[in-house]
Image (cartoon, rainbow, N blue to C red; front, side, top):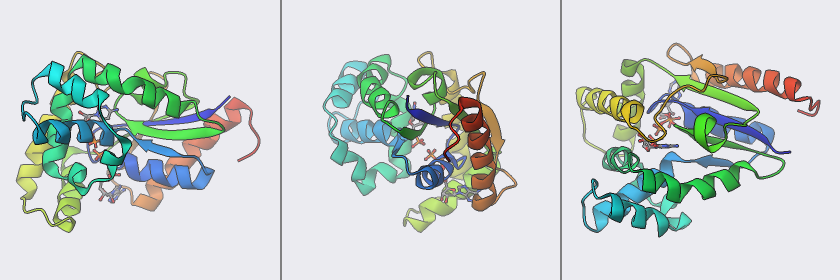
Length: 216
Ligand SMILES: Nc1ncnc2c1ncn2[C@@H]1O[C@H](COP(=O)(O)OP(=O)(O)OP(=O)(O)O)[C@@H](O)[C@H]1O
Ligand SMILES: Nc1ccn([C@@H]2O[C@H](COP(=O)(O)O)[C@@H](O)[C@H]2O)c(=O)n1
């Protein structure tokens, strides 16, 4: 049976950073599911531009090619906003389900990060982390990241984005962002990347011991 590490949490909490370090440490493949929704959002922006059109959004999700996740465009602020708008459509989520679920079942294990991994995609995951940080810390991290990518934006604009995204992601009817009952909370507000990774690894090690696999 595959050992699945599910990493969920709000925008810019550092879940992707923790997930990629865990993947490297355990030698597992990693899937950043946010990129799927971002790529669907970008597809719609490039076509009709109507992010509220559920039918067009589902068609965009069904036509998605994995190569589209590699485009620099999916990592922009606009793509993040578009992703959270298309992610409310149940048809989009259904269209992306199998790809994520199949990834989760890869042997000998996988690391998947997103919003609904521990609750919907892999509710049976052996290790579940819910990575968070205060809105201000997350906004600061995302702001610096976007400045580094050459975007021109203020801290206050990013903080407003983060608050709006939290509200939309947590409030939607379909697979809302929520901590799974059996996920371990990891608040990285006061942690460096290396401290966050160490804490995450300890959580996973505890889950591995419980799972009964002595091989690290
Ligand atoms: N503990 C930390 N301390 C300082 N910076 C961090 C920390 N964790 C992550 N970062 C930085 O914050 C930014 C966002 O991190 P990351 O992409 O991992 O967040 P995320 O939760 O995956 O975001 P997304 O909402 O895009 O999925 C990156 O530039 C990353 O290097
Ligand atoms: N499993 C997921 C992953 C992401 N989303 C939505 O996509 C937006 C962008 O995700 P990032 O992780 O790249 O910030 C996010 O705000 C969610 O709306 C999702 O619904 N489910």
